[in-house]
Amino acid sequence: MTIHKSRIITVSIDRDWREVYDFASIPENFQRWAAGLGRRFERSGEEWTAEDPDGRVIRIRFSPPNEFGVLDHIVFAERKETRNAVRVVPNGTGAEVTFVLLRMPGMTDEIFAADAEAVQRDLNTLKTMLER
Image (cartoon, rainbow, N blue to C red; front, side):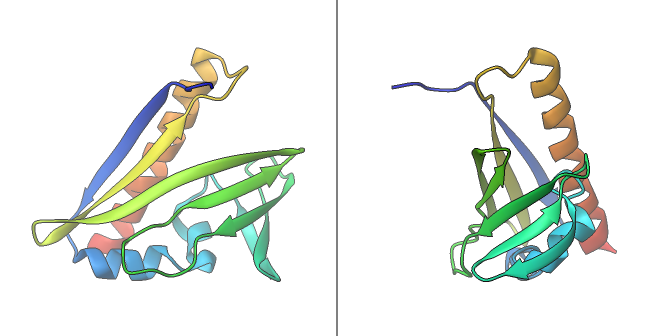
């Protein structure tokens, strides 16, 4: 069994957690705030296709709508899959959005740090959009 190094990236949003979840759970909205995931989202059956930041076509499977604030998604790219755990939870009258970033085999310290920065930028974009 292998346990990967992880980093939890979070942002507080001054908006009801259900409103944050309702917006963030719509796959088409990911391209508006999650530049690190991709752009040009199109539905393809139960999955979605998109272009990743490097212009490669990826497949994405999103968790179904739920009452628990789960925004998990799996990215399929270049014969590998990356599972991303994302949650929206109540934080007082607002919301806390968390993303668990895993350091995958072969990932350098620099790439892991760059991925963490990209996720933080995406979460900050979501915050800015929803607090307007």
